Image 1 (cartoon, helix red, strand yellow):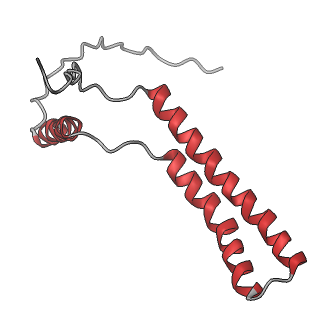
Image 2 (cartoon, rainbow, N blue to C red):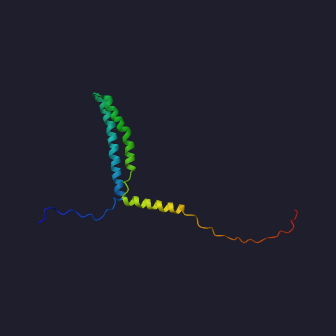
Image 3 (cartoon, one colour):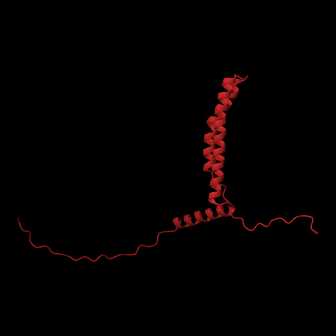
Amino acid sequence: MKKHPERPVLITDAARSQDDQLRGRQIRYVSMMSVRAACLILGGILISAKVPLLPLWLSLCALGMVLLPWMAVLIANDRPPKTKEERAADAAAREDMRRTLIQPPPEPTHVTIDAEIVEEGPRRAG
């Protein structure tokens, strides 16, 4: 009799699909912008309630309203960090590009251009 239930076996190390990544970024963006809207509403409530330390609370709300859109856009446009394999592939591609740029250009092939010599006759005035 086993004491521990069997753990699922990891069958792939595949990254999340692009659609899943996009969905996660959209959720983070909407949640951050919702917090921004909450800061705006909270600021209005604080002004009408005239709470103690009002300037401190209003400055925190204003800071949230200013910084959250900027952070939300940065986070929404961010992609997951590259794996070791992706970094290695990028490094190999850069090395291949560097090698092709460093190699001397191939020797030019000499091209002979055939041309017919046309003798002109006397020009007519006219």
